[in-house]
Image (cartoon, rainbow, N blue to C red; front, top):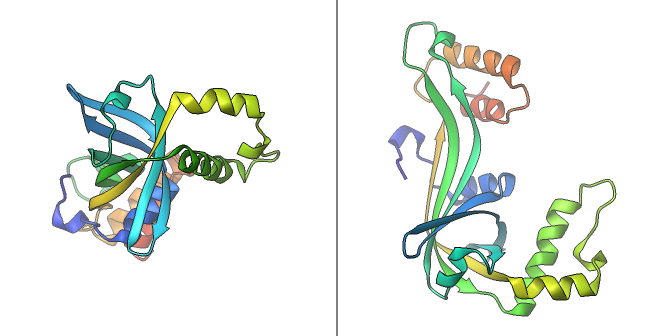
Length: 202
């Protein structure tokens, strides 16, 4: 990960918050070539830190290369937006504000029991806010029995955690306020607005 010093965010707290708010990640491993998949990833706190939990289809080419201690990279992307230089007080170069976390990890394959438990947690996490949630326990047994043999669940144990929050850290507050005003007009629901406000105490 490219980490200019002024944007570096390597704290566990930063990583955990971004992951919980943006759990759909890019999962990258080395096969015969580099292989990537977009998958939902859950974070589980542990006494000595945290681990990440996910699964993928056995028909996925990555499945042939999954094994205990396999090295992998997970990429989580936070809110982002194009920032036009026309929003500044003085002429400058346009850019992109964003946040991201890269986690180099090692894999441990789940048992069937662990996979079922993690699927229950995954479904609960995303269904709990629905008007009429359909939890894992509500699915027909036959459907679950047919589904489970087609997927592999695994844990990802972080080895290194690197983060970036690029939020115009070196710019004057007037410029940052202009950026926020423009974003509120063009994409008012973008959480990047809150990131900018928090970083600059606005």
